[in-house]
Image: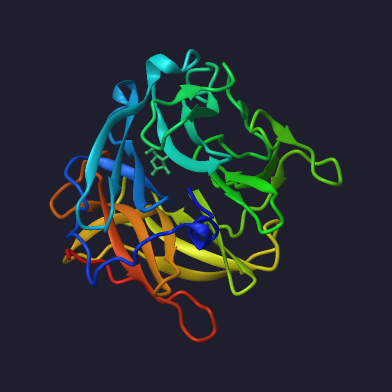
Length: 313
Ligand code: FUB
């Protein structure tokens, strides 16, 4: 996906029209939405929100204008990941040298003691079909207490590709080899550096750069509950340290509950910022009843993110 601010700065993307499609952005239970901009199109890659056994494929959605969305079914299917059986989660999709790389998590190494963790698939087009690249997970174990899920891949300004990830209240950063086939040691030999930004951190990390600062955002609260939310911190390096500055996205009892696991994109043409996230419609309490929404994100003059107003528009 992102650092969307980076991918977008080179992309020929039309400024969206004033306003965008109403929320939810498209029908269906879709969570953990990853936003990307490829060429002239906006893309969203979500988790298909079902029980683990039925999470066996990913759909994607594309739009020229954030209003009209096209569904692309099964862009990555479990049959094309030899080591995966269930629980396909939380995509992060990037373009590199004309190929598209789809990072995902699969299986349950914690409870079912099976091969699993974060994998990577590749395709020639953003709508796939994607095929597993490695025949095994890229990260297949806990390191520093971090569950290997919820990866977010980004390219820093110096060309280095990083992946941040982590459930179970711990976040790691790793440097990726240029061909995405392995984790590469950092200058000091470290493979997995813990960058958990605050005790409230739960999962769903993402990062972008603005004004020379690294914004680290993540989900807090329980993912199946109404208090799921997004908070952020700022640092001078992707390695931290980071200072937690507070929650910016949470439920609105008049609109929806459980608002979290987000991504962010920036439209340079009009310097507008958007947050893409999942939430639970009012009256729904089932954990997997999650739908995808987009709302505007604003900064104050000091670069702090203002609380997001979640809407039905
Ligand atoms: O969709 C499965 C899990 O729910 C994700 O990995 C978490 O971030 C939470 O959104």
